[in-house]
Image (tube, rainbow, N blue to C red; front, side, top):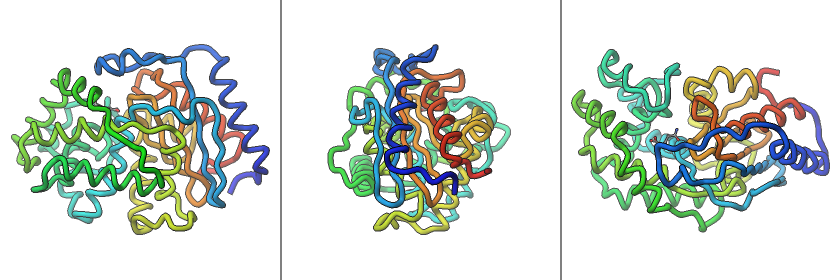
Length: 310
Ligand code: GLN
C-alpha cells in the first residue's frame, strides 16, 4: 500500500516532519486542568515509525518519556476485551460521541452506557471491567506488563506525581464515575476505579517505545500476535471512528488511518500491515488532540500514500 520508500527516504521524511514542526506557527496549548501537565514546555516534538519489515525511523525528542494519558485507553480496551470478549459491549458502545472527551451529557439519555471506550466515561467502564475483583496494584501490573511486552522494553513506568495531580483535580471524572455507578455500570467503588484509571493514564513512554508497543495492532510484525486478528480489526475500527473524540472525523479526513490521542500530546497510529507510528507534541488543538502531532501525521500520510482510503 502507498508508495515504496527506501529506508533513506523514510528517515529523511521523519527528519523533514520534525524540522517543519519546529519551524511552522502555533504550538497549541498544553492541558492545564492537570496541574502536572500544565508545566510541560509545549515546544517539543517527536516522531517514531516502525515498519513491518523490522526497520525503525526516529526524529526529534523520540527518546523522551511523556505522559501517555488517553493513549493508555487502547491497551486497557485490549485487556478488557481479552477478559470479557464481546460481553464488554453490553456496558460500553461503539459509536463516536461527537462530544468532548470528558463530556457527561449523553450518559443520562443513554442509561449510563458510554458511547465508546475512548471517551473518559467509556474508559472508566473498561478500567472497571479489567479491574474486576483484583487489587488495583495487580491490574496496573498487568497493564504495565502488556506495554512492556508489546514494546520489548522493561523501562516503562507510572509517574505517581501525575496520577496524584489528576486525582486532586479530578472532579469531572469523579462525577462521571458516580453517575455510571448510579446506573449500575460500575462494579467497583468510584475511588478504586478512578485510582486505577488515573494511574494508567499517568504511564510515561517515549515515541520510540510507543511506536514499538503499537506493533501489536498492525499485523505483519513477526512475534507480535498478542491478541487475535479479529480484535486487532475491532480496535483499529474504534480508533478510526472514535480515537480523537469530536475531532475524529477531521483526523480521518486529514490523516486517513486509525489513531488514538492523549492530552499529554501523544498519538499512537496504525497503518494496517505497513507500519506503527507514534508522535508527540504537548500543545493541543481545541479538541484536546496534539496540534503539531496531527499535522505531522497528515504530512506523513501525504508523503507515503498510507491513508487506508487511498
Ligand atoms: N487522564 C485524562 C482525563 O481523564 C485523559 C484525557 C485524555 O487524554 N484525553 O481527563
